[in-house]
Structures are given as C-alpha cells and as structure tokens.
View (tube, rainbow, N blue to C red):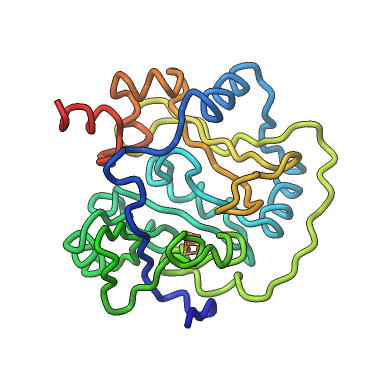
Length: 259
Ligand code: SF4
C-alpha cells in the first residue's frame, strides 16, 4: 500500500512517452509565456511581491520544470523559491553533471534500470520510465499514473521532492493569501543557463489562474525558457539544450536517432 508519508521511495511510471520524445507542446503554453515575458506581463520579484508569492507557493505547492530542466538554474534560485513548508516536485536529466545539492530538491529522471541504479549510487532518488512495469526494490508506481488508477495528483502526493523533501507535504493545511495583483506570474530568474551559459529566464505561473493540469493539480508551474529564442524554434534548432541539457527526449535528438 502506498504510504504518502514515506518520501524515500523511488517512483516508476509505465512508458511515460519515452518513445515519442518530449510531451510538452512548446508552441502552446511555453510560447505564450515567452511572448508574455517579452511584453512585460510578469512581475519582477520586489520584496512585497516575493512575500505574497511565497505564501501562495506554500499553500499551493510548486512544480519545478513544467518545461525545462531546473538544473539549468542556479541552485540558490530553487532554494529561495521553495519555502519551508511547501510541497514541491522537480526532475532532472542532468543528474550525472548537476552540482551537489540539486539532488536535495530534484528527482533524477531515469530512462532505464541501469540509469536508476547509477543515479541511486550517486545519491539521487529516481523517477523512472518502466516499459516492463517491473519495479526495483524500493520503487512504487506513481499514484497519479493510469496503471496505479489515478489515485491522486502531485499537489496532494508530493513524493517527487528529491532527497531532502521529507517534510512539508503531510496533512499540511495552508490557506492561500489572496493574490490581489492582476498578473498571473513572477519572473524568478534571468541570466545565464547553468548548462551552457545561454540566456534563459524562469517564470512561475498560476497565481491568478491555477493550473488545470489533472496530474499536478493546482501547483504553481515553473517554465524555464531560452530568453532570446521562441521555445518551438529552440526545439527545432537545438538551442533548447540551454534549458533541457542532454535530455534524450529533446525532439532534435529523437529526430537524429530515427533518421
Ligand atoms: S503523483 Fe506526482 S509527485 Fe506523486 S509520485 Fe506521481 S509524479 Fe511524483
């Protein structure tokens, strides 16, 4: 039986689109957010905005990487915007190269048994695609997955919170502050990618219009984008490596493999 209090478990999910490549349609939400950013519709995090935003993150939870790999950001950004008491989720394909500390917050995205075993040996918890539905000891099926019967959503579950996430997700009732601002998002970071130095931006959305994603629930969503290339163009040209690193689900890599 799933014990939500046990945040030490590793997670499997059956055939999570691994053959098809990245499931994010970059010409939809990421493109809208990119263009909104360049129109200046998102708030800069003044002290007042930041305090309000952190209250809401504490109540709603935060999903690191609705698009983009959080290891493209400085670790301090993740720490600063994951307040004590918040539930969060996050995943990284950069688990072989990310500096120490990221495994406290993120799950290693493992694409095979061997990946999972290697990531464990490096101190990461894992989220693994399992075509065989053949879990390792210590793994459970994601309870939001079809094969587990869609028992819950990430906001309620919160198991995918790296190796430091043992607190803050159990029976915690936090009442959200009312967000009085017209904007839906806050810019968390503008600067070089920690992966390749290209300009990137991270924006958290969902303050006014909560996410309608059934799987995550109403968690705030972090979008990590190239700051200077529209996201669907970045995917086509390979400029998305700044935010996705060596993720094997990048469309350009899938195309190269299948040609
Ligand atoms: S429901 Fe979300 S947080 Fe829980 S195991 Fe599945 S992906 Fe991770």
